[in-house]
Structure formats: structure tokens, C-alpha cells
Amino acid sequence: MNNKEKYHTVRGYELLKRDKNILSHSMEDYLEMIYRNALKDGYIRMNALAQQLNVQVSSATKMVQRLSKLGFLNYKKYGSIYLTGKGKEVGNFLYHRHNTVLEFLKTLGIQEGILTSTELMEHGISANVVNHMDLLNRFINENIDIKKRFEDFKKNSLL
Image 1: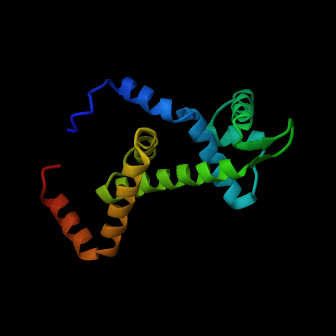
Image 2: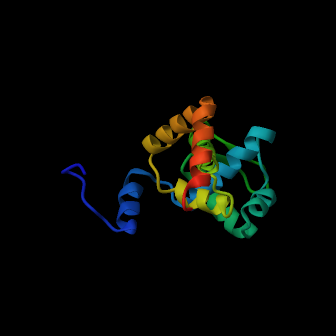
């Protein structure tokens, strides 16, 4: 461990991370979902967003208004929700982070509760960790012999 690094509680690490990041976990989830829809349609409507995130429309409206004030979205009451340039950039990272963690868990052979595990893990890792997970995912997928050896190793282990 680096001498400058100190142990904290999980909440302590979250607070340290939050000081550097103005987005809460919920805000990240909203931006990621809006980005997913923007990839297909270029926008999303409030009802669809609320439905996809399993929240009330009133809750979605409040969050969209907050994200709009922070410059991530363009939104007018009763209108469509569009990402700004800043929103697209952050949304792209959040989408990539989610998919990287999901792919990593699939590589490990996780099946049960994989979406829950992905959601819980993705908010607690840095961009540096995401980049290294992505490298490992690509390495494993490009080296089928190593992937096969890992699968065989898992079968013979005491999991």
C-alpha cells in the first residue's frame, strides 16, 4: 500500500470519490440510461425514462431537472430529453464502464445476479480500474487458449 494512502470505511471512500465527482450514483444511472436511449433514438421521453429505471415520473422529473441545471441535458417541461456534449461524453464513459464490468463478470463465469453485481460494482471503481478491466477483457477474448485454460481451471477448482 502506498504510504500516502489511508484506510477508510466504504462510506469514507465514497465521500472522497464524491468530492472529485459531482454526480451521485443515481445521477450516473440516469445519465447512463439516457445515453443508452440516445444511441438508438437520439432522445428519451420522461415516461420511458421512469419506466426503464423503475421509478416514479415525478422522481425522474426532479433528477432530469438537476442534471439539466448541471449542463448534462437539454430538457423542457413535457418535452424530450436530449444530452448535451458534456452529457454525451459522461454518458459514453458510464455506458462503457457498465459494459466493461458486465463483460468482466461474464468472463469470471458469473451468471446469477450479474446485473445487480454490475450495478453495485460499477459505481465504486475509478476510470483507471475500468481501463485495466477493459484491457483484461480484451486480452482474454483475444487469447482463446487462455480463456479455455481458465474455464478448465474453474471446473477443477473448489468453487
